[in-house]
Image 1 (tube, rainbow, N blue to C red):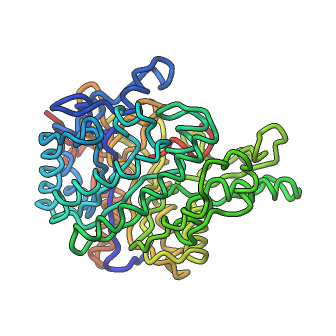
Image 2: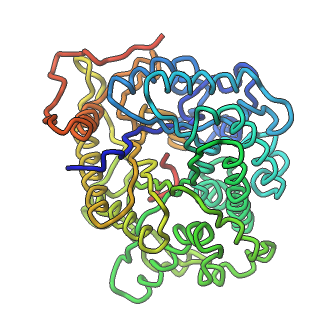
Length: 471
């Protein structure tokens, strides 16, 4: 396979999922701290208080990325670590952590991609209504300006929001994520404010960061009907509007999809629809997170959209019970390119959870994940052949981590983490990815396995249905 010479090979993670130090050195409480410490919300009542202890072990994790040949790291910034109350008082110790992380990345020749919001809203702002409060647009703008001023001399690649669909509908309609609200009008208002906030901060970043490249990250997947029945075809159209077009249309067309607005009816009554045009600010790229497709059928009981996700018979699945469907990534990239034409597209997350064995002889054998990785990289290559401006790929995730409502039960990492000892052990998939990167960076490189059994040379030690819980 041959990718463009400037194609970016990265790995991704997020603050609450790996940092730990949840209330350390002045960090304020976030909504996921409150949510995960409420019994019954998270598998096994797990929480992110320690997670991967990345806050203290980041030099080791950066060295690990460098050893694997990873060229870019997509990380997120914890809003309450920088502003414990969400506004006002700055926590210099928290800000210094991100300064040190960025410097460590650059010293290792790893390009930093900063995500401003990956779900850990300060609880102090949630107490004021959170993303459902229109003031959040100004709060987010002030927070963005601080980060742009402090990190913008070194960080040039910025992602405003990660998966606004999950924040709004999984967190405020389904209630499976923080803050655990179940109210459709609130979810719609949250989505609206997220899009307006994105439109607000893109110009701020451009003004404060010389040479900035700015975009947003959406979770996306193609939607296929479960049968040829007209009702199932209609369910697929509705699912596409609900999950995909609800965010892409405002960002690239300055309007909500009219068919989905009509379905929501009175639930949209308090939302000024015309102002969504301000979300369509010019951006430099779109980040796309892909894990699986959706197969849906008509369900009379599921109002207001009457859609239900189903799993195709005998479909191969991950530990998340998500179908493994690599061509869905190609379909995703081609459709976005044809319908919305972003300047560039980053695959900002792509990965899989499997039940991995414990390390043996310094490596974790994860053939299913290695195969998933290879199949999806081939899908990216096919999209490139069809003219898609794919600019980079970020494997999700660098480390096994706190997987939201699934706690530590689901492992997405290409690096195994023993959460008792914090020992990091690269999995076979990490070496497959390492070989892949080398084969693209050095044209004469032949991608054979770099690690033989019994050779622990790169082991490091340290001091619900589809869509909604990934990344």
